[in-house]
Length: 290
Image 1 (tube, rainbow, N blue to C red):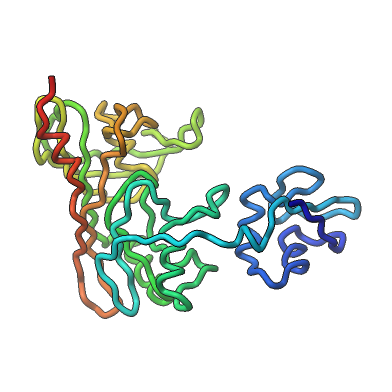
Image 2 (image 1 turned 30 degrees about the vertical axis):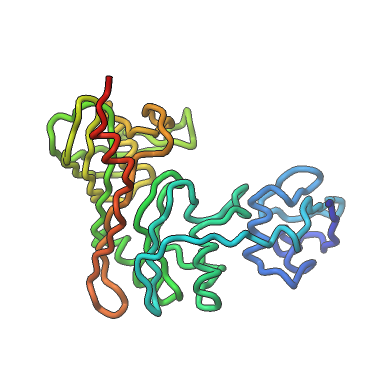
């Protein structure tokens, strides 16, 4: 389907869409623009583009059909009136955006589960994110007050997070703190690297168990940079198993799991939430290797 819209010259693209389709939320229409499904003169354009008299605005999807996101069922670790804590499976994205806007995600699960309490204009209660390939504990907010309360703790770095990872070979020393800044990799914009111009990043690690070929590590990030654990271990020459982006050996999944998260709830309780480590982690380390 392809549909052209009318507009007033000088209008921003996003405002023109909102005027043409008042039945849809501005957040939804903006995401269509981000997903490159709204074209100006046949080309994807930014939401802030000011339309000229001869511009042709075209929507390349069926709005009613594309707004539907398939339901998803995720394991719930804890729930009260303010928060929803889940055990995110590997392969599920935290928040739908861009070309993945119509893919089921943690955000869409919070919307469908919490109903009217969730606010789709504000990332549907997504307090923090885990990479698609990472599994484990995620805490989500059911209302804006809780969202702000929890996010402030992440910003202040008072949230305690523990991850489990499996790497190839042995790690020396067996325990240490990696203190290396992280920056975006200009040669591969979808990835990051250790670099002197990057943001400060610290990760503490401890060896839990090891076999002839693999080592299981406990990781405690002191900061929350994108891909921090993956980048730090790769820089040590020990990329996480399954992390092909950073040089890890091939596996059925990324061997990185958010095992626990300790945070203060709006009720005033300080709670530790834990997600069981997937069986394949221990099996990989214990298995005999020829």
